[in-house]
Image (cartoon, rainbow, N blue to C red; front, side, top):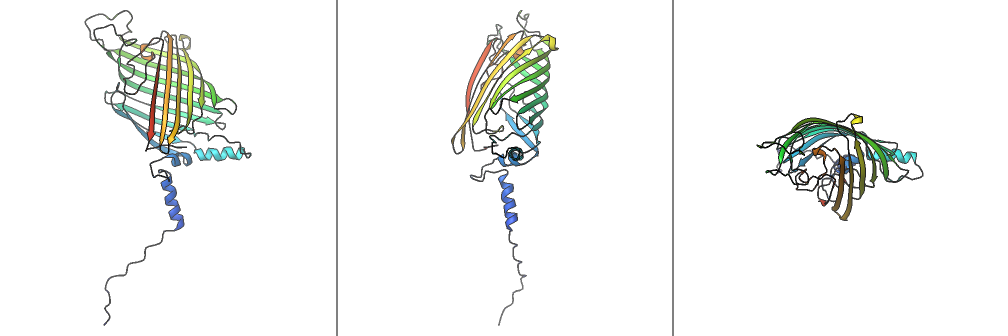
Length: 330
């Protein structure tokens, strides 16, 4: 006798079409490296436009642990720019992929009560012949002043102070020919209220800055920039060097006249399939009636901001490496 099963037959599973499989693979390629499966946003950054949330961790000893969060808007994709440039250059003379125009809005906060936020825009025009940078930022910082040259000449190691105010920058650069060199000019304006916590039973020395003051600084600068990075996000190779000097003057609407100059050099070199070596060196200089919070300082990882400030110039060199998590690769 034949026994008949009472169970409902299971419907066959629908076969995954080649289009669906290809779409799934394409979506995964936006966020993961197809070679090693590591998180990699280069696919998204290269092909997509629109908003992208960005966040990072703050580990600066001067303000304590904290974080930043914002929204970055990509006005156009890298691949879209490359196609447009290639269309206008059918002879195949395209040498570089122009970065996208980006608008960013966001803020930060740290455990010592420092916080701030701002809006910035980087515009790329005429096949990366012109680069525009503009931004407005407000911050409320709780910092420490260690004196000039690290010698306070007082019976304490430092004084705490607050720095509240806003900062505005407008900058335009032009590429020289078909090289990686840019020259440009900028305008900077800042207005800060400073308050020093001088809890001593003595009068401040003559050289000491005012305990409370609102100070406006306005300046015009010139700069030269060399940029051969394979990407502006997290480069794997190339050099990014910048030299600029800014002249702050009372005739431009500021309260003091002084000059600041900067030279910064950064380089990246891949030395393994998943390792990138990064090197950075920099120096900065000031002269004239420079406010104490704008004096040159040594910038080294693990050292509190403004721990060592000088009257004339200070330099710093450091290295770093990156592996595993990659936001962008060439």
